[in-house]
Image (cartoon, rainbow, N blue to C red; front, side):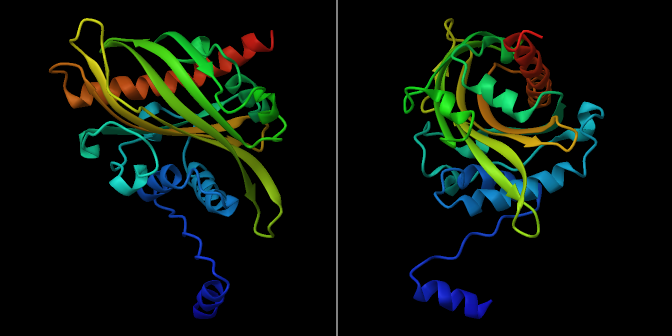
Length: 267
């Protein structure tokens, strides 16, 4: 190890960060390192998350595949514009699930301008691609990064708020122990740049950060996982109720995405 570090220093290269295996640190790592130019950084993190999901009953009851991760730290969000609010105010929720669709079909859904059918509790959800005149390059991985801006409104039992969400999708290749291709994954990172308030002024989305993951499964389907760190103003609603609604909404979005793909492919 000392020889490796010496060689890296002599060559002018910093050593790669080591991806954690424990869920709390791994979730933060995937968010923090998402924009790293070296593909190996996210490859290791994706592989570790895939291994973790392999220990879960992803087709089981919601409680058995749900988690309350630790909050993000300031260094995890240092490269994005975000609301000036304490990260410890967020209520983190993580949940895994299964998709019957292929990962390439999920990529096709991701490049659609109208995401309303795929988004739980959205009255409208319009997606634009500021960096790409033609986002179809994401389908064959000619471009491995899909930068999106999303203008939407959410309406559920807690709130009704219009907002703009920034969300970047990235293809990440997972390698086997011999360094050969094993499977593809897609990892997306999202955030608000500002606070968003309801039309009546009695509720708000104050900050939101999420890491979404799609993994090719051996049966041709996809393993899903999302960690959401969010702070909202919904009056005196108990935190446990808020977490329950968020967990239900994320889980429901997995199924809505599958149904939206069926509609997109007319099957």
